[in-house]
Length: 182
Image (cartoon, rainbow, N blue to C red; front, side, top):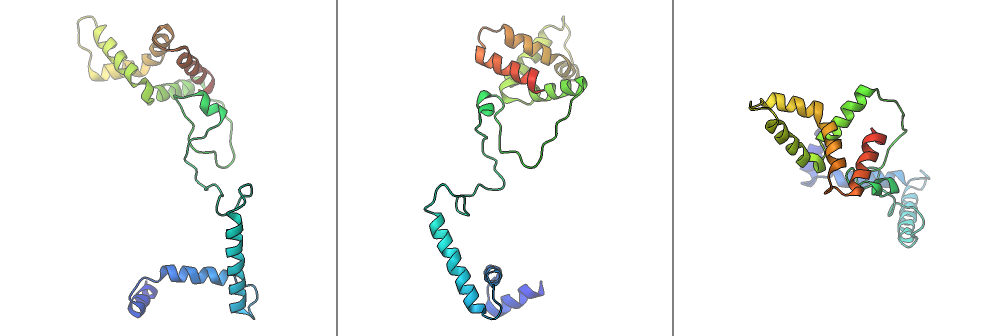
């Protein structure tokens, strides 16, 4: 912190960017007997490589290298198959395969359904169905939510499969994701 204060008093401005540039120049030094020459040569080589890399589209360089963190859509054939659950980004690191228990599959299935924007209207429809089918009594909000958690996945599968308004593509995608992915 004292170092920053010294530069602010000496130069009346923030010096971090200058110090960072000087650190970069220092990294270009190859021959410690000829400091200025090494820095100048390294800088010229960097500039030439940058200039040439702008003209070669097939070669990966600093200019066209993909970013480390890529949160854009992953446009491969698997993600094009599903418009309900688009794949975002790209995998980083190794992968690990493990088997879910039936209870974990049920929990994952329920979580995906209850948190998918395309399914929200069906959840509202199911809540209304619960309220209508309660035989004259009004169910509490806790009871409605308990029944949504317990009964919605089965009701939703039946509702989607028997609906003439739901397209065959949606049914196919839904069945693939609910039975093969979970």
